[in-house]
Length: 209
Image 1 (cartoon, helix red, strand yellow):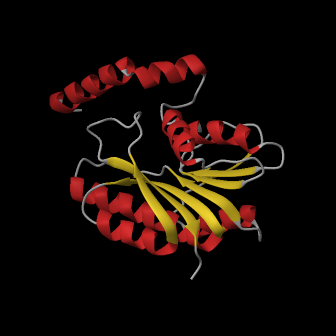
Image 2: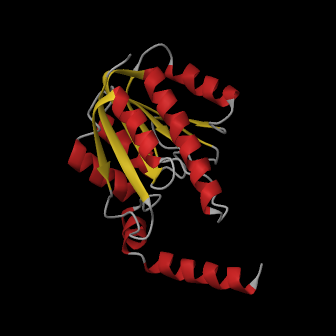
């Protein structure tokens, strides 16, 4: 590792350890600081209701599933997937695999079954290379896959919440989502780091073509 890379890594680690959301997540037993993002989105947009069927894409280490599952109650269902492994959570069906691969997509679809889902959550992000244009393209590709999955599996009137990085292709993606949903809000949760270009699109009232 270069000295420059080592210094930047040390700086990031120091910032991470000092982050109040990291500290609060540890105190509350949340698996990641990202849990606070979903908490805020849910408080603002009323995403999760008892009895819903929900799919959590890019779930590891489980921060979002950990928040969502108890809110669904006994009759609800949550299916989670990620390329990374995730420690089991009660009443969460987890499938490990690369969502970009057809076989993994088919396996998730088999778990979902014939019943349409109420909510698709996507906190997916690619491994960052440090090359902005490549990272943005890789991120948008995951967003497009999440959108295609949502369109294929949501009930009419369903909801889609997805992390998107602002940059090249963002406006085009926003138009794509707006064409399929009656309302689309752009959210920047307080737990999103200020310098990050990430935002969340909360798309409601899915209207199948």
